[in-house]
Length: 380
Image (cartoon, rainbow, N blue to C red; front, top):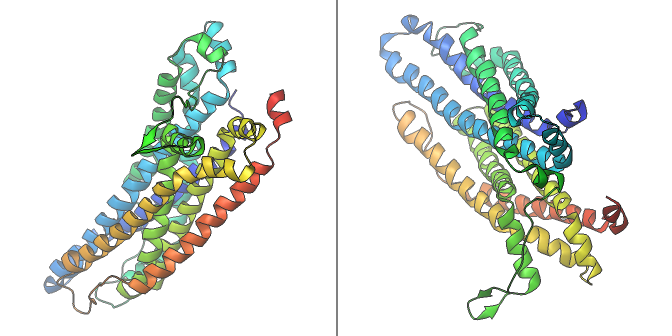
């Protein structure tokens, strides 16, 4: 049942895993090789330079790697749930034929192939630029020269172990989702947006479109998280990359910028396209009852705007707090490190670009709504 096409559709999780391991490999492999020459570093420099570089690698790897690993787990569970929702009838037939939940669920380990591919490519890609990264880290010549070494324990910790964990997670999550009556699967029952009595907001009764907008976002919390995370990545990474030119290097700035853009666009397109695809029947029925496609788009898509703006705001605070901590705590004893202040010019530029890009994506998705055919939906 799990075909190659189904696996290829999940390329977004490979991209997220690639970014996670790419960043962690750069800094953790550097830390391992730096620890190997600790005795060659002059004693008066060990405490300041060595400890500062080691702490930087640990902080960046923990924050970026941990955040991206959590995101990979969420996206993986989302794909498993989406696959089960789409193939409920086939899975129900298997259960009716006597297949146990575990016998079906363990096949979902193949969802870990995308994870393994992303981790492997991220590890290999990092090794391709590690020599350049080492030179940039020591461009001031404060440390003795040392070469890149392959650390097998890092390969196991960054590729094999997390890939096995996420593969087991997909099996466990599929097993939990399959623990439902066979008839529910055969009838393809799923949680639908239920709008009962009109709710009131203060002294004002909500209209049908306003209530639809609230319930659409509330019924799909995973998509709310994706849109929040996309906005968070765009805000934090772009603002951080602009300041990294002075605090670190141009390579580090470009790396953060590229990772931020990839994560933001991948998760945002994944979320919004899924929203439209999951609500095709609702949109078609609304259009039958006289609602325009613009009103349908407003009801379906606008409920996610608060999550987007909240993610942007938190991303701004996150990057400011992280950089301020790095400058005032980690590198407080380093000479020549400039003071860090909030960059309002960069904030305004990133905010305007985010507004334009987000609204453009919303507009493109609203055009997709116009292409929804009632005839095709009724024939399903």
